[in-house]
Length: 284
Ligand SMILES: CC(=O)N[C@H]1[C@@H](OP(=O)(O)OP(=O)(O)OC[C@H]2O[C@@H](n3ccc(=O)[nH]c3=O)[C@H](O)[C@@H]2O)O[C@H](CO)[C@H](O)[C@@H]1O
Ligand SMILES: [Mn+2]
Image (cartoon, rainbow, N blue to C red; front, side):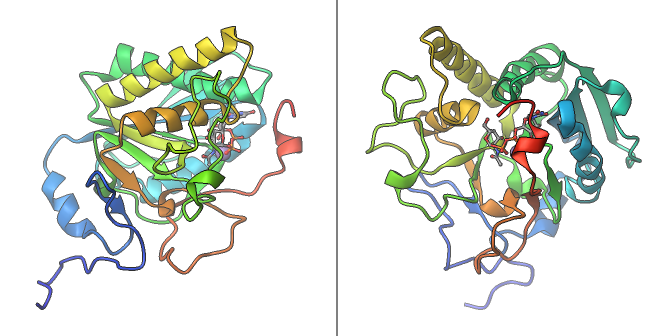
């Protein structure tokens, strides 16, 4: 059958549907013009959170500038920047319907704590400000830039992004937390995918539930004197094994600049910049 004009052609070289019947979004599996038209004229509002603490403030300018070019262009977007240096937040011109709010947070001295504190602050933001206001939220790493379209195709109740380093790996090679004492523990026979801590989202209720559960589990671990191998990312992976995402985004939605380009990656939409961990983090 000939495709109708504007239909997506689909992909046969990658997984486009999970075993629980939810789409994995790749270039070629959706028509952005058609999708956007479904939301035009609605009050669709997207919240996004980004944390820029300590030396990571240096990434914020490019993050915001490229976000303006590629992330939900034409829609209402409200970016919440969490930083310990509010005076260093760059001025980036934003289109109408788009705005930025700076939230000042105390300086933390361990990168593991900064990373994990995000879940707590995101759930507080949802509770206090977003429930009646935004429709969806995405929580994003700041050490990254947008390079291509990221729009309404990414919307879902609970949205996970496939980690660029592990989407072709066997379950046994996924870097889940493997110590049974941790609340993030994944047994050898568990796990669908390895999801990124650096990008996830969904509707407000679902992301709130994820954050709440992961915070409780993170603190439960801490009272036992342990920290999951990849902090909140480990807990998010446990959560998304139990609570399956309703949409999965391919590694186009969080690539890594240092990684070689793979043939199935037809577009890079968002990518982590290469950085010197020892130089940029407050601790090792
Ligand atoms: C691409 C990806 O999935 N990255 C995840 C990965 O490592 P990453 O190496 O990407 O972690 P990272 O060093 O980028 O830290 C995560 C984020 O925390 C913030 N930050 C961190 C340190 C600091 O001094 N200042 C600051 O603002 C910043 O927004 C940064 O983007 O594992 C981490 C686990 O802890 C997080 O789950 C990251 O999201
Ligand atoms: Mn990062």
